[in-house]
Image (cartoon, rainbow, N blue to C red; front, side, top):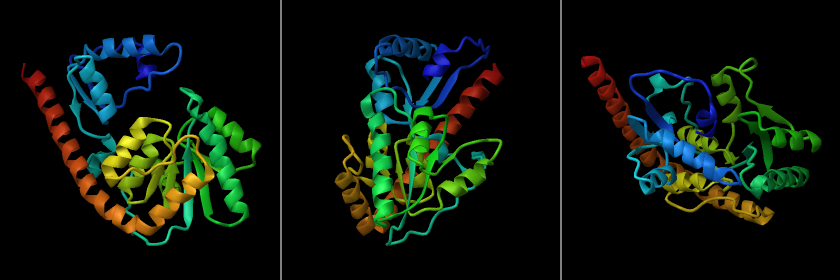
Length: 272
């Protein structure tokens, strides 16, 4: 939302719709100005659908009407640019993938250093088998630290990967530990257990919705905290996946309703 608000490109349209919107975080010295610009822009929208409770509550507090559904990744398969390949639930978690991101909004960039420390320590004593570290975007600070610590990583590059190939590489694993929101959203779709790195409250809210439990690696990201969470999921991964299947069905139904609403709005305009 921040990048869109600051854009100087003028786009003309008869209807303005915001779908799958995630707002914030609005932190830092310039956060108030950015927040106000975002809210001002959203007040001009004909229809808003947010993906999470945090964003919905923010708009509600500011008297902006929106619909609360979930992420657009829960849309029907025909709308997605990749095939959903659900993983068979397993009782044993051996292979772990980290999905990391820069987080300049607070001092929680410390999670990158702690994740690297965790990988190096447990790779050395062979406690876990680490598949890879994944970057979804140009997370420059994170990439710099990974290179410095000689940690192998995979970064999204449209010239190198198709979306399907990138998904296949990432989710060939038994557990995902992610500080990126879509890292855990996609994990739930592929039926892979996940642990959110809680840099943003939206990650924890999504996890609680899917698992009906508080699971996450919390600040200050201590080694024992993550080990405890991995052990917990190792014991209950099948039960967690079974519960999440019901929630994901609900999310898909919500997205279908939203898409029908959008279609109705567009058809109303066409009739005019």
